[in-house]
Amino acid sequence: MEKENLIKKSGLYLIGNMSSKILTVMLIPIYTYFINTETLGRYDYALTLINIITPIAFVAIWEAILKFLLSTSEEQHGKFIASSVVFSFIAAIIMGIGVVIYFSFVEVDVGYEAMFIVVLVIQGFSQIWQYYARALKANVIYVQSGIIATIINFLSIILLICIFKLELIGLYISYLLGQISILLIIERKVKVLRYVKKNNVHLSIIKSMIIFSVPLVINLVSLWLISGFGKIMIVRYLGATENGLYSFAIKFSQIIMVFGSVVTMALIEEAISKKNEPGFPQKFSKTIEKLFEIFQMIGIVAIPIIFVFYELVKYTDYYISRYYVPILIFYSILMVMSTNVGSVFQVIGKTNIIFTTTVAGGFVTVVISYAGIHALGIYAVLAGQFFGAFIMIFLRYIVAKKYIAIHLNFKPVIFRMLIFIGLSIVCSKIDVLGSFFVSISTIAISAFAYRKLVANMVVEVKKKLCK
Image (tube, rainbow, N blue to C red):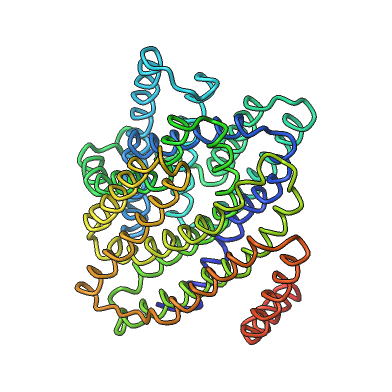
């Protein structure tokens, strides 16, 4: 794989996706002072359910959209787009009716059921349209839609939460407006619906796309079981307030998850185009090792900074959640790397392996969380997530070695892991000034260790600015 292409694609996706995570960081103080733990817990619980239901209802058709449009000629694009659009509308109708019926028999603590259903449908289409943009190589539009959605979401929260004090419904509306903006911008620029013609819709194509996506559905659901099952358990057994604490803490590690997701996007696209080139296994292995290093260093630099923030909000209800952060960051790194290692199976068409390894990780998460929730509380959920992610990356690496003979050097990985653990323990024992000193020292040491990389990045930025 060409490093330059991977970096270019990662950078482009990073701009769009990191904008949402910058929003997350900026919203943390707002959540601290304007949203109570119970409201945040209920809202986060609703989004968790949405992210579990969406891939099931739409059969993760977006995965097939990316695969088939990237690997077929432009003349065939109309058939795949039209067929998948028609399928998506039918799936949305069935999903909406099904959720309404379910809510009429079962009480679900999501606050506003009608708004929940609207967000559920719109997010599904928003995600599908984003994949259309990527598959049709409209990557700039994909990025633009993410940035604009982030701005709309942020301004809506300022208006609805900080000024009008709408709390839960304000969170719903703000999120919904962001998703609608993504959908409208991509449709206006890419014009997906222009492909929807009667002659372009083929049941055989729909069948082929579903067959490809089905293994990935359970994979995505299992991924959300690893990250989301704990929230369900916390709400059920500990309450929405405890879930609010957990949701607040995990927002820090979500930055790593999103950064990892954009790298995975680029990694899969680049690997699909380079898989038949000589030396692919060696290049893929080196890429994975470098990514491990990048994400672990992000965690090492971030942890003391996060503890500084917690000391500044020491007298809020969220302060106790600081102990969850190191475990969640560690878990996020494992999840990101398990996805990156697993991307090779998507490239070679062995999505069933992604499915089985994710189910194994999900099973471990569920068992540990459920078994320990009464005795250990939130820590049982954290342990379940950590070991679930570990099982995933372990199994995927073992199986990947058999298919493409990759080989990773884990000694540096273990060394950086020990540094992270040591920093986490130290920062949990010291005050704000001590955490500040540790954070400055960590940044300085990291900048010195990677001075050549930093210098090259500065040069590249200057080149871009001078053009």
